[in-house]
Length: 169
Figure 1 (tube, rainbow, N blue to C red):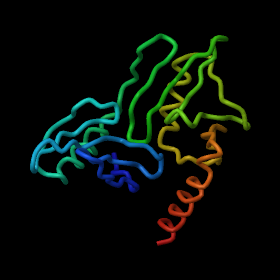
Figure 2: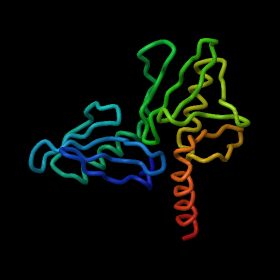
Figure 3: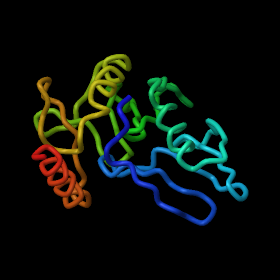
């Protein structure tokens, strides 16, 4: 995986949150356990390593995400995975249709409506294909894009502006 260009560190009490500006979510945490001793946690909270160097902690987290995460489930109608691009969920409704969510606030849409999928596998495949997509309303070649809640519209404009500046250099 290419390191995410929009990671930044946010200090909090006894931990440092590794946050993605593009997806507006925490992708991991670095717990400060003692002077110069850090425990590295994935976004779902499980420990992936320890180190005595903060830079190595960030590198460990980045390396962890080089291996694509696997789908997991706590119940048959809801499957999820943690990625450096957000927490991805695939949920089935009472009519048997599957929907794809990212960070709980965003979902895949097609033609302005929530995208539905007939099977779990089809929904997971769509999620895997679009997990790296920026949070914009621009549809990809298959017609899918992420719906952005109105409260995130200003954030989306900032990301598009950052991308335009980065691509002009």
